[in-house]
Amino acid sequence: MTSTLVTGIAELVTHDPSLGDDPLGIVTDAALVVDAGRVAWVGPAVQAPDADARVDVEGRAVVPGFVDSHSHLVFAGDRSAEFAARMTGEPYDGGGIAVSVAATRAASDEELRALLARRVAEMRAQGTTTVEVKSGYGLTVEDETRALRLAAEVTPETTFLGAHVVPPEMREDRSAYVDLVCGDMLGAAVPHARWIDVFCEPHSPHAFTEEESRRILTAGRDAGLLLRVHGNQLGPGPGVRLAVELGAASVDHCTYLDDADVEALAGSDTVATLLPGVEFSTRSPYPDARRLLDAGVAVAIASDCNPGTCYSSSIPLAISLAVREMGMTPAEALQAATLGSARALRRDDVGHLAVGARADLTVLDAPSYLHIPYRVGVPLARALDLGLTPTPTPS
Ligand SMILES: N=CN[C@@H](CCC(=O)O)C(=O)O
Ligand SMILES: [Zn+2]
Image (cartoon, rainbow, N blue to C red; front, side, top):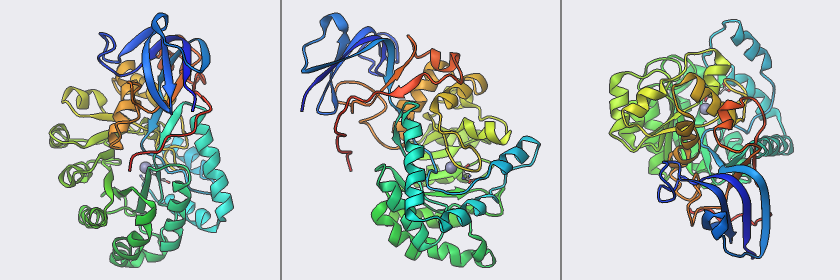
């Protein structure tokens, strides 16, 4: 294994507060040494040690690779007409998920694997280096297991979402479906999943109630999975408080919150993951990130790349929306899409570039991270390929 010195970094964002006065731990005119897939040294370029190899990024900014802690990448089919309807005022209620379920069930393993690989490559090309991938478009024991098996080929952050919606063939007997999710489906999913998630949403007839969600999450936890929740997406609801009650790592969407939700989050270890691409693509009001941050809530930003509410895999777009529409500063938004989303995945080896972190570097065709929201829509960010063998992820 050779060490690599990365030079020519105009601005390096480390998130290591010991490396500068700024909370982002910014080093200007910086260099960084990578050894065995980890950050081995960070500092001013003039003090850089020698290394076996050298990569010059020629005056660009480098930030921690984006951590996308919420995505649904294992699906087939097309729902662009649904997006167009949304733009003319059609509301979203989760009913379109059944369209993706039918197309996904009909696809072969090879088709799904190719679609997934293309979406992960698209993310990497935009600077994402860690991604969580959910099942949820299979909704049978066999199809959910297949989705998780394929997801596990591309990431260790796999999430069992059998409780995405009640599938059309079981609508007459919801409780039988909940039994299946908590029983055989969970048993088959566990070997391929790290997380369990549920779409807890009283404003969708297709999603799950508070009681159903509590049952499913508790069964998942008893089976050894860690918890995450889709909550408070379409209106006020119990998702946030349930996530906090059960010790979920993250509750995602958080679009409609009351004071008790914010208070519960502030006193908890549950991260509020905001998904502004969803509000953009469904013409919905954006969550109030400022209110959460001012209350001391840990906030993450992720893409929620999925065929229904947001078919965008772009974290730079999510950062731009967070800054323009949700009251976050560029620094807060970048931190939420790296350190915050790593926390939402309970990972401390990614989302920052302090010594010892995984060497997941995202390089910007710009001199500063401020250009991410400033140059909205311009493809500035890409994951830096150092030709490294990936280091194993902690279990
Ligand atoms: N809300 C639930 N699940 C996805 C949307 C899935 C779909 O419409 O296909 C979400 O996170 O928004
Ligand atoms: Zn989602």
